[in-house]
Image (cartoon, rainbow, N blue to C red; front, top):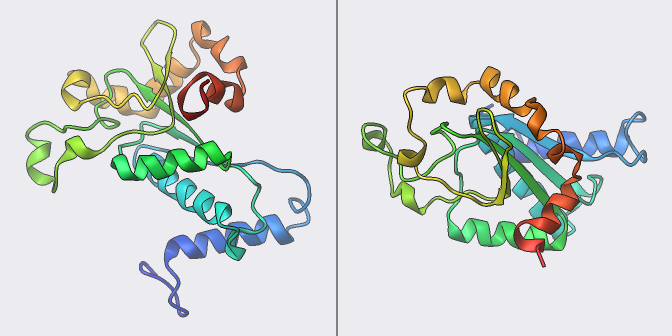
Amino acid sequence: PKMGDQDGRRCLDRILACVNEEFGNNVDVAGKDFNFYVSGHSLGGGLANLFSFRAAQLKSKGDESVKNLPEKITALTFAAPVVGNADYNEEYQVLEKEGVLRHIRVANAGDVVPTNDIIFPVSAILKGDTTQYTQNGVNLFLLPDEELVQEYGATKSCASQFTFKALENHLVPEYAKRVTLPVNKEKYQQTVEEIYTKEGPLCP
C-alpha cells in the first residue's frame, strides 16, 4: 500500500521495521558489526537522504523501532536533489555532531538536478521558493577531467550548473566515468570519518 498498511504504519516505518528486524534476527547479520549504508541516485538519492535522517533521528532518541541498527547511519548519494531547508539542515548537523549520521554526497559538475534556485521553465511547475532549499553532507564534486573538489554543503544554483549536456551529466554512465578517474584515487583513501574531520560540522 502507498500510504501504510493494516495497522496504520507509514511506508517509511514499515521499511525501518524490516531493516531493524534483519539486523536483529538474521543470523548472517545479527551481532556481526555490520555497517549501515543507504544509497541512491537522483530521486533515490533524495530519498536516501531523508531515510537516513529519520533513521538517525530515531537512533538518537533511543527509539525501540531502530534498536538493532548500528550506532551510525551513513548516506552515500549520487546526483541527489536538495530535500531540506535551513531548519532541516540544522537538525541534520545536530545528528552529525552526535556521530549518528554521515552523508557523502557525490555530484557531477554540470548536473542541474542537485541544485537549487531552479530556472524557467522547470520553475514554472514547482511550488514554493526553491532558493530556500540547501544541500547537506560532504560534497564530492566530480569534474570532467580534474581532481574532485571536496566541500561541506556546497549548494549550487541551477544557473551555475546549466549546460546543454545537463542530461548526460546526470546519468549513471557519466558518474561512473568521473568517479573512476585516476586523479581521484588518492581522495578515496580517506575514510568517512577522516573526511568529516576535514569538512563540515566536525572540522576543528
